[in-house]
Image 1: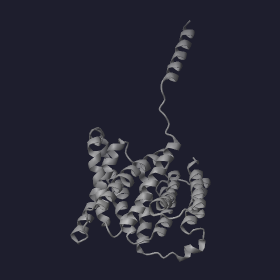
Image 2: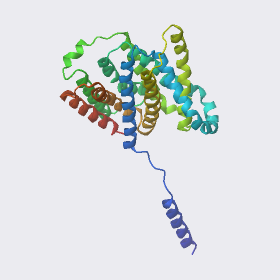
Image 3: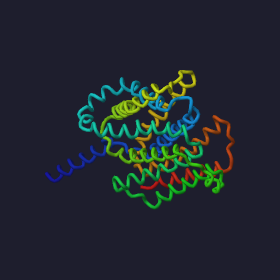
Image 4: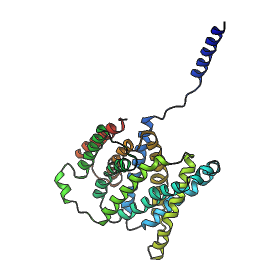
Length: 317
């Protein structure tokens, strides 16, 4: 009788456990969509940065693009900040370091570099990001890039080169690099280190994290903005500059960083890094739509190679 009761009890416990809802596993497909959204926002920022180069001071837009999200997020983040305060205080140095690196410094250097380099050079240099992310992850955390993932990165890199050289590899030898390109390469390395270190982020609410990230980034950029302003490089408040600042504050800053952070959290930094080649795809599409450039055969070939490489890299575990 005891044996039967124990058996019945065990069955009931099993049935109860089976009936309890299990936490849903994050979807890889959703993570890829978020990462693609981040690339789209950043591609728009590249187009914007080149369009306003020389008209909007780079440090001004860098400071404002982080100040606006911090102000907008504060009312929503406040209750989470109170709840997360013990973890925030414990990890304050880490939060400040990650935010200053991936937000403040990266944002400033991006707009400074876009003042001096060309569109084709930006496309080429942006394709270094997945390689630099994988290198940072390997050096800092001993991550390994599988052969299939490396092949995916290489295939998508070929796709980028097909687009930027218009299927004429010899055209790459005609690229002229300047110190603005050096700034962009250094900035890609900064982004690689930041992305690799995202795994160290404390387990606080995403609103707490994003508010602190924006706040620290704004504080880092503000001194440069003041120096720039006092030196005579003054922001002119026109309808066009307000629209540019609004876009930069919302999409490449708030939306893109939220999407990128979540995507990296779900599929890992090496797999996520391959999706950055989509920036070249979206840049070409946006140029076609907004500037009127023709979509040609080499664009289609490059897109196919990039998307194939991203799929191959992101599908590996």
